[in-house]
Amino acid sequence: MTCYVGLDVSMKETAICVVDETGDRIWDGKSRTDPDAIAAVLARRAAGAVRIGIETGPMTVWLWHALTERELPVVCLHARHAAAALKLQMNKTDRNDAFGLARLVRSGWYRPVAVRSMDTHRLRALLITRDQLVGMSTALINKIRGLAK
Image (cartoon, rainbow, N blue to C red; front, side, top):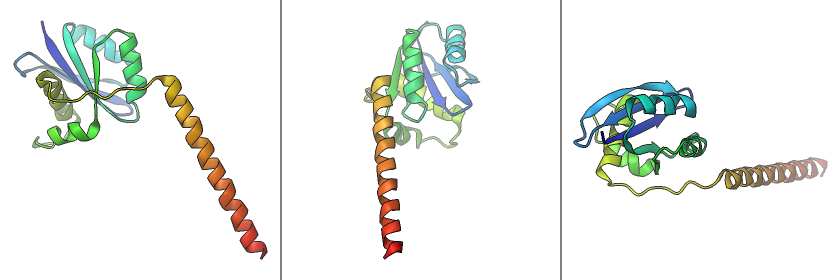
């Protein structure tokens, strides 16, 4: 059976919603934010998933790569674009956000975001950390010079 899935990710739990071709909710629930746990739930509840929608966020890169390695059809959506569609809902909850993401990937009215490789993210984190350390060192040297005057 063809179905579409929306994942609303948070640090501990991920809200999962599965909709059919017509946009009706088949199943919704929660899972630990762990690729193995999410893949197990999707294998049971959404075996014929055409697309799985996930918003950009702090956990997205890790989760997207882990689910893609498990050969799941994950699509990353920009959080601002998804927020515009999710804003139309009455109650803003994780469950309703997952439902909205599932309907969004079903409709096809989105532009997927390219997720960079883990090596790129590691390199960027190192460069940002280095830049912050250089800035802190410069500020400290300037503060000591100012106090010594």
